[in-house]
Length: 309
Image (cartoon, rainbow, N blue to C red; front, side, top):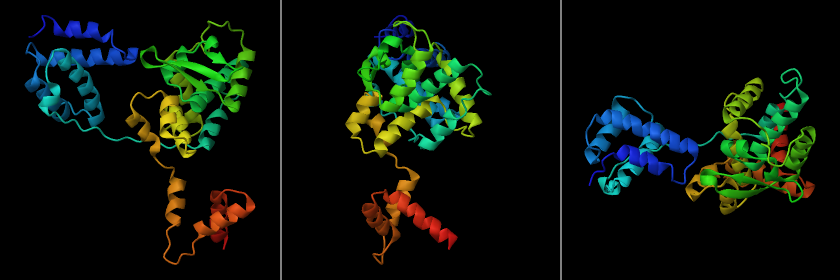
């Protein structure tokens, strides 16, 4: 049975869903586009498949864009009580790995926060705190901009982040982030209920982009810093379940994207395969164990000496 005004009723229902405000907004935009394309036709299996084909063949949407729109439209058709799962709709979802970011690149971005670029000393401390909070706690943009002073507990060393659907999670603050936030809070006169940083998401994005561009790292943006946190946890062999909790992922499959391996780790792993059984990687491990240093450092020295020879 078709509702009298299914589009409006679905939009009203979206407001009650456990979704981020930005997600609800973009879903409504996608729905309005679909409604316009329907041009009075009733939504169903034929129209949904036809619209997805239109997005691919005529509009030229990327696979990732079509997948996002399909998620919104699938919710709409399910809201109408239609058996979308039985329609056997396949929308290719590309597996996009976030770029692997090295700690040196984060340091390079922080090094751009100077008097020449940002004359106000208070803003310098603030910008350093924002970038460091992203990189050392893995908070989302909406979570960072929603932080209040009360959400930061430097005595117990944790912060409270309110994620999608206002779900709260507690994130430990390590010693490095503790010092940075302590310095920032000491430089500003904020009350417990005040916004921690007092900036809108768009302003934060532009700020991070500015420093990344100055550092010659245009591929790094604000959300990349969250990826850095997840990748570093994986690199440090933190269990996947703990990474999922720290990042606030509802689906373990989302966490799996951080299981990518750093290029240098792949190189060292490949170097361990040998026909002769006498390779530098094995030597590096033996020497590193004796000297108490990492095999990566020993391997780098071996390769450097090779180059000089």
